[in-house]
Length: 107
Image 1 (tube, one colour):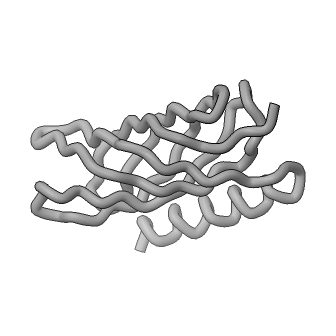
Image 2 (tube, rainbow, N blue to C red):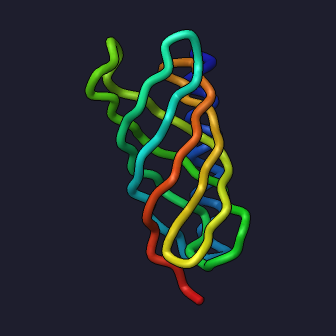
Image 3 (cartoon, rainbow, N blue to C red):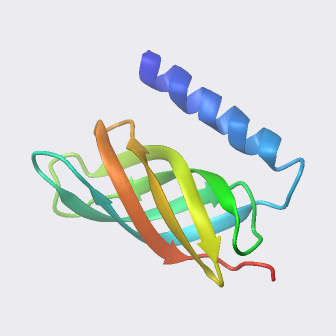
């Protein structure tokens, strides 16, 4: 239940941040750290689509070689020219996560 409350609070955060700025969409590769590290693919909503900004992110991940194939994550990131680096926590798999990928940004 605590996981779902955290996810709901994160959705609220990202939706309230979108009132102030345009949201963006991230597509990229993620790495879950832990006893069994996993590499996967992710799609995330980003709180701001401008370059060179610190942003909030929420998303879903797919890990093709993992025992638990799906993940849901929250975190923060930094945008750069048409890209994003993220650091966060996968609440389904209970692991810290790092991500890097493409996001169309405004200058």
